[in-house]
Length: 109
Image 1 (spheres, rainbow, N blue to C red):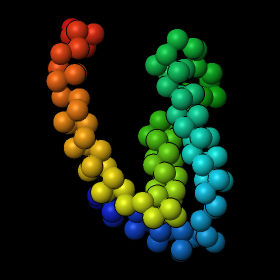
Image 2 (tube, helix red, strand yellow):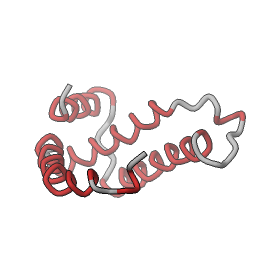
Image 3 (cartoon, rainbow, N blue to C red):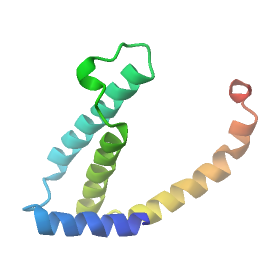
Image 4 (cartoon, one colour):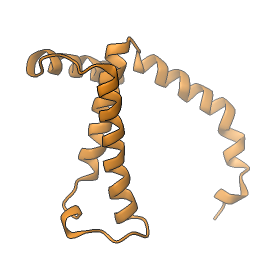
């Protein structure tokens, strides 16, 4: 599924299972909360902090999906075409960053 399809699926879900979109500020707070949950898993599972027993069952994929879902909600309610925005960003990064990353001695093994 492409991003346009994902935006449509989320909109259908909101219309079928939700009452309405939360307002933009609430969704921004939700997005921040979900990113925090991803950060907690990453810092404990892959970083230097120890992982609590209660956190070992957390599913990183599920938390990342939560981030994507809320980001799509924000895009839908603000009229952003994520497919167009993502394609434009990927093109920009490809043009701007190709040589920068290829020539970065910090990335060499």
